Length: 154
Image (tube, rainbow, N blue to C red; front, side):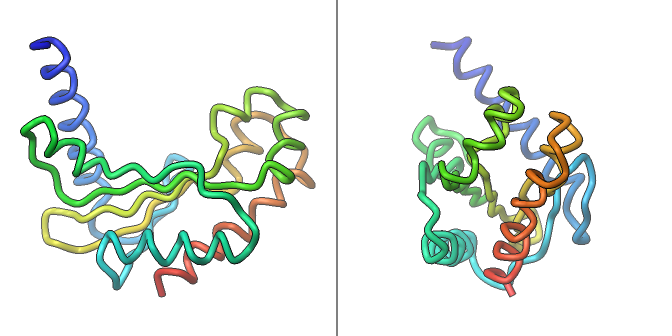
């Protein structure tokens, strides 16, 4: 149990370090896109969930990382991950390149930095093309998702 707690602490500190490095301005780096949200973490994820389901996508999971941290006696700024997608669209990508399954379904992360500012981070649509060598026409199917996510936090 002690090992598991230490491992969790290490993972949480790594997450905090990455988030701290990311805080400040909207950017795309390491195939991540980070944009400011004018909503709370929960409201940001609620808005994204509503937007993606309205487009016929399925919600696979909603993970409250900060809630899970609290459940083991640790503190973490609000951080929620939404995992979503459409098997109709994603399956073609995974058939073309089975390794794309490591990055699918799509993910949207809403998180609060140390100054209380809320951010949305997601994988850049070109990640799958670059990382897995997907044909451009298949990778282009993901472009509208990025726009949809950004619109949800405006």
